[in-house]
Image (cartoon, rainbow, N blue to C red; front, side):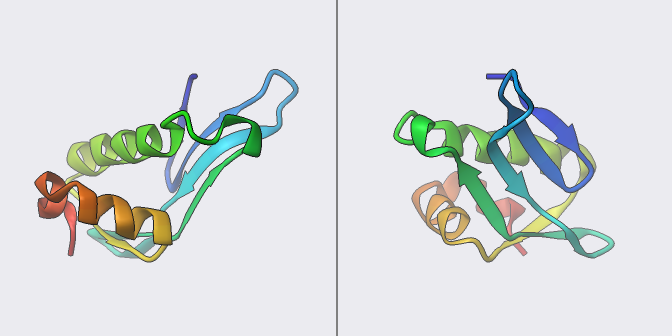
Length: 90
C-alpha cells in the first residue's frame, strides 16, 4: 500500500480514487499537531494498516521536528501501547 503524505494528512487511495486509509493531523500551534482522525476501510481492517499510518506519521513528526497531541481514540491507544514514541507527545 502506497501512502501520500500531505501537509496535514497521510492517505492511501484505491485505483478508483476512493480513500482506503487516512490519518489527519492539523496544526494546533507552530510546533504541534493534533492527531484527530484515523480511518481504514472496512475491507482492510485487521491487517495492521492503521499502525502503519501511525509509523508513517511518526516519520513525519521526526522529519518536521513536531510534537503531537492525540485526540483520536486509535492514536491515544497506539501511543499507550508504544511508549518508545512518547518523546513525540506534547
